[in-house]
Image 1 (tube, rainbow, N blue to C red):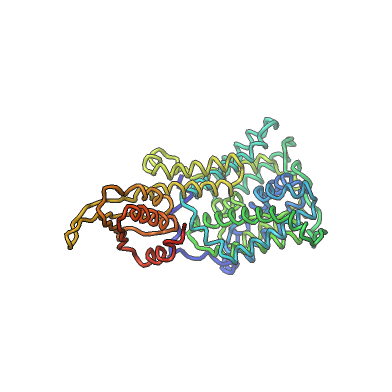
Image 2: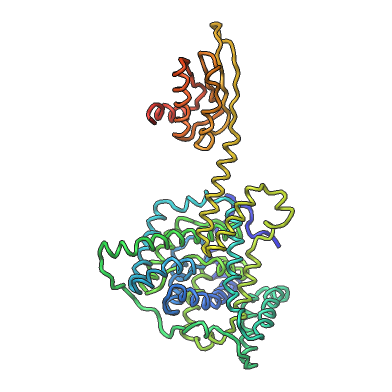
Length: 504
């Protein structure tokens, strides 16, 4: 199976197809509509389970998924990406619901959306370039593992018929595309298993067992909370956490979809679009959310959707299915949806990254970063925490590797006036990790009275390096020796001149 993390997008990547083009093409329209239907069916049990995590009525999660998907289809920057109620956001805001109630929960969602808008306007999307490929690979692999983990509960303490039904559904999803690539295989599996259980009167867990489906449309809702500093003190930490987790998952998902589809997207617009969608969701009483990677993979990779139309239809069809056809949707066996999510995991996992040939060829530090990202994400159940830890480990290993590339060579030469002088040639990048050892690289006692430090092949990056050079000069001066620092490039000279002597 090919890697789920292709090479980074290049400048020649084309924009995603437009909704107008999809509406003019019956083939594209069919693909987008069927993809939206499959995603809507897959969203229902997920939204219900995330509602339970957040401690709210299942209808709150379903309404949030509807409003998020519809809103982001208009204001988002990554076509075909699915945003809805998510487990990561539910985990962050659950304590607010538990300790302060529903109105404070909605106030948190609204503030979280506003924070996302502010962060987007501040350029938070540009930080995506600091996430290494090894962290992205770990993110994708951890996602696949977490998706499978969420399905395990549906396979424990269930009637024996669930297991062969799940196996049959997996076989349909894997094999049907060889027969027909127009109708999404997950939709075929869902319809086939639902018909089988209804006709055969087979008693297995179904969507209806997950919680009550809504029987009315969402309505405008303004939280009844005091507009005071005390309220802000309660909800602000959770709103900030929700904003950061939601943006991180959404921007990572957008980057992943860019790579899969060989198209580019506007990450800044996606960032503030997520904020707008959460504000809209909050005012309709929803629990908030962000991009859903599993459902996005169903939409993009399994069903072949490429435009905002599939996202819009996923939200609209979700509401129609729940409100208008709730009795029918409730009959869908969970075995069918488990099979869909398992196959999404198989397609999402980057199998190339764990092949023995890849592991032998890949630097150990890159593999270590990938594994740390996977382990931390799986242990915490939080993709955002795993990515942050992975980035920190990658930065630490990079700093350590670069620091070891710094070299200092000493030579004693005779100057034009006949005096001897020690010339130290420093090569490499000088920053906190490499310059801390610089102080020990000089022979203070045995050097001649004049010392030259040649930095022509080096660059000063921070105040730590300037402080180290000051310490070197100070020690030589105490021994009555003079020091000249030469070869500074313009940026290094400016930094050294501005900071030298003023760092204590």
